[in-house]
Length: 220
Image: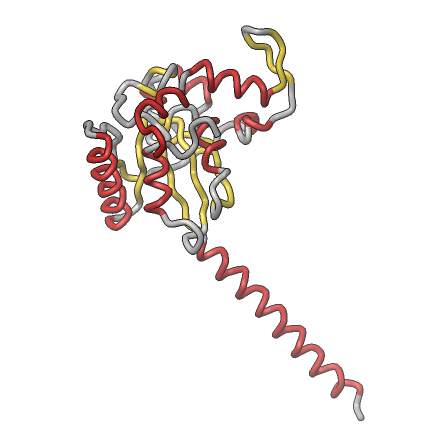
C-alpha cells in the first residue's frame, strides 16, 4: 500500500479535530455577553461582580465622556464627561443580563445623583450603558422594578454605550493586590487598604440601609 494512502486519513482526522476545537471555541466566545455599568468606585463594583457565578471577567475603566484615552487623574478631576465604569463579561446561559441588572441596582445607591457614598462628583455617578433597544428596555424595566421596591425615585440613567477605555493596570483587580499602600492608618497591604477604604466610605452600610436583605454584596 502506498504510504500516502495511510497519511491521508490521518491528515483528514487531524483537520476534522482542529475544526471541531475551533467551532467549540467560537461558539463559547459567541455565548459571552458584556454589561457595562457605572456604580461609583470601580474597585468595588469589580470586586462585587467577580464573585458572581457565570461572570468570567470584570474590567475597570472609563466611558461616557469625550476625551480619548483618559487617565484616572483626568477623569476624577472632572471635565472629561467619563464615568468610572466596569465591563462585566458573562455567560448568559449561567446568569442573565436581567439578573445582573437587578444585582447592580441593589449594590449601589441609585437615588444619589451626586456620586456614590464618600466619592462625590460626576465621575462617580451611577449609570447603565446599552447597545440596542432590547438592552435599553431591559434596563428600564429593571430600574422601574427597583424603584417600586424601594419606594423612591431612581436617578440612575440608561445611556447609549460608547467607547470603553480600560483603566490603568494597577486599578485592575485592585481589591486582591499584594503590594503595600500608605493609608491614614499607616502602611497596609493593598487588599487591606481596599477593605479599609470600602468600610470607611460607607458603601456597604448605605446599601444595607437602602436594600436590607436584598443587597447582594454588602458585607460579603
